[in-house]
Length: 485
Image (cartoon, rainbow, N blue to C red; front, side, top):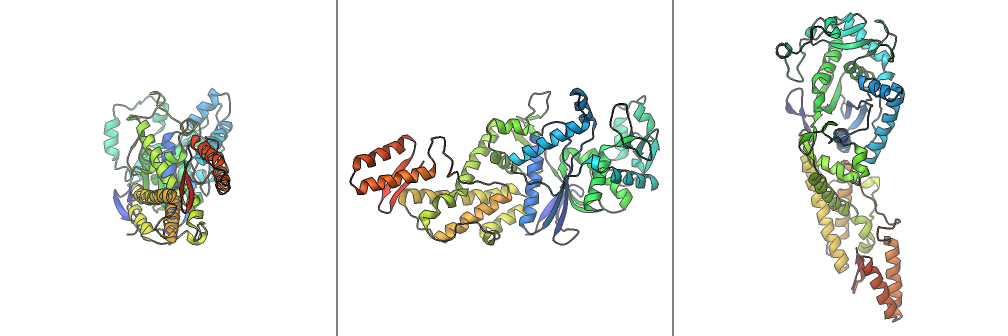
């Protein structure tokens, strides 16, 4: 089956085709950099990281752009609280973002445009909207006239008449911004400068851009008029993504994106995450308390990406246990290749696209709207098969399964797990918590073998008992001595 994905715009699952054959232009609405990233950011960034990885895995050349909103009321508020500047606050949290994402194993985007670096494109887009009659200036501000765009509401399914009726009792007609507008739901493209705030020169006077116009300009500048995938959290469907469509398509007359993808929200113990409820968890808080980053990735991938997920202690424990299973399978080749003795157990580029039934089943599952839980089932199946074989090798010294078959299963597991960003490396050079590295254990076993050949059974027993006190069990057989922790 070919890839099909659920399109928020059309409210149905559609076969995926691209503007240019073999290429994907993908934009993800990134973070507003005024604080450390939280669990909601972790989920979104992991989901779109894996979507990008999967598209590359099935052969697409993906250009992936993720923006930073580095001018915003929240950033300015944080700067005032810290007696700092907008630039200093934004730069600090951009660097924190990269630190957190690196710990989660998230690949960097191809480019990270910033709103403050896109002023020419922003002003050009506003000028075009004004020239075409979709925007109007008002006392230093510039507003988008939503009634001028006939398709306004097509992404979210909202109708202006219904919105106006529902808001009639909530509108404050005395509000200064409301009085500047021709219609209550018109939104700001450009905001007049306020005392003490950063501002840029423009045809409408000094000021700064509105939030929605920033993304429209960055998409157009980096990827062109029409892209393949526009991604973000479900909370951005309205008004942010709705307004992006209105702005961009009014100017170009072309679809802004052919597929709109949205990830579900994160709850904590059944509640919406918020600082007021005391359940606001940042990525670094979670990882600093010892949760394995790979378990976090697995936790996110175990749920359908469009559905809400609930972060609980039990859920992260289940993900941690699941990761231990996958990790043991991933380490199989490193631990048992010498004992199996045949075949090239490396992971050179020549092996990266091996085709077998596991890979085909993985693709068949994930091609159904990025069904990563279905793909994980294949990964767990492979990991458990390799663990069983590993136990047989440890206890019997050999296995009846041909080494080349085990090699292919292990390589397949490593390749498929990497699509989800799940990776593990042996720690052969680093002592474990019991103080013994694998290399040191092998050296002691060799010393024991030498002692036994010399009929120094007291020394042989001493080495065996020493290892046993450290949790290392030796198994002697006619094929030799094997061990496990």
